[in-house]
Length: 171
Image (cartoon, rainbow, N blue to C red; front, side, top):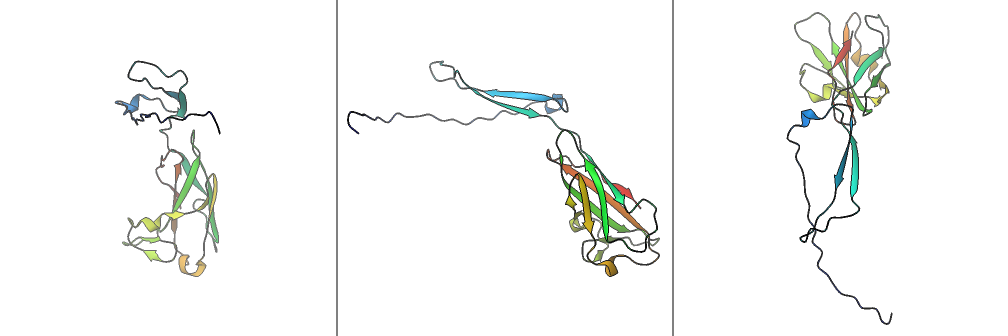
């Protein structure tokens, strides 16, 4: 190309962050617009600037076990299912805990393949299929359900804003 001149000009790039002193002052479920614009060394202010809109979400959702029903007697439970909800951020992950609640000093928790006595074992919170409507398939029918035993089921949900609900149970 003839007649075109190029020159290299230094471009100064900076990054920035801002820490909110009192995040508790941001009301739950309210929208906030964040505007960012630049000013150079001779006080030229950027005419166009970027805006980001966020919704503050401080509320955990809820997750409930629907099937099997609370205090029901079952001969076989091939699947446990339920529902969850969260607002304004939607539910993204639901977890289930199965406890053998038969009267004894030692409580057992299902980790997906075997019973364990370690209540703090993170594997005892089982990932389920789905979020708003969820289910957990029982792969080891003969290993998990024992005749005349009582089981306690707990569920909890994490929403897209990383809020996790307190576990709720049925049994």
